[in-house]
Length: 242
Ligand code: F6R
Image 1 (cartoon, rainbow, N blue to C red):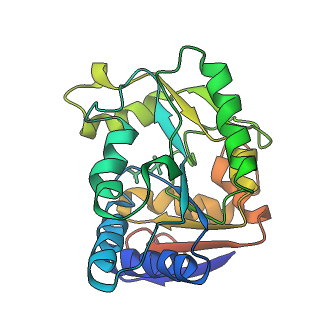
Image 2 (cartoon, rainbow, N blue to C red):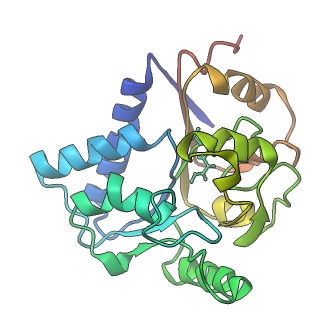
């Protein structure tokens, strides 16, 4: 694992966006694995700015998102479809049919998981997967206890995750209980991974990631077995590291 410590969130976003831009420039038909949540917002802002100012093109790029809530329509303000549209897709030249997100409203959710897994295989896997981390160590929505070999599947969200995501909703009751997520096995097949960790709330989980053995109660710990992982963390997140 390569570890890059930066001063603050702004620097984290600069480092991460530059890595994405470099990959897209070098291999314009790359497949990018994308995340939602608070962490990547600033990165997407910089990608949009770079697209406007320098014309980096996403015409040939494919994107696959990590996850989507079950039961929210694509135009629901808290769906990840909506999030991606708002933060990135509407502001760059990525063709709509090349942006892939699990469909949390599919009639047959099991079949949707299978379709998504096959889609990723058809794209020849993810070239660069962007990851945030939950305070309980989840990656994607793979909560503690998830099998390391899991593929795209339906997950019951941990109450701690629902509480952490409550800030995006009016109340806890509105936070969905289920989601579709790429599995840990799916994520591990990515050719390279960029794990982004910022803010004091992530200090404990980052310390645990460094100190603890690989075990499935800390899903992100499996990343230690991946050959090409870069962790970028800001000072607050790194504050408990020795
Ligand atoms: C988002 C995702 C989650 C988040 C994690 C951190 O697509 O899969 O694993 O990356 O919950 O969320 P934030 O960035 O809001 O702290």
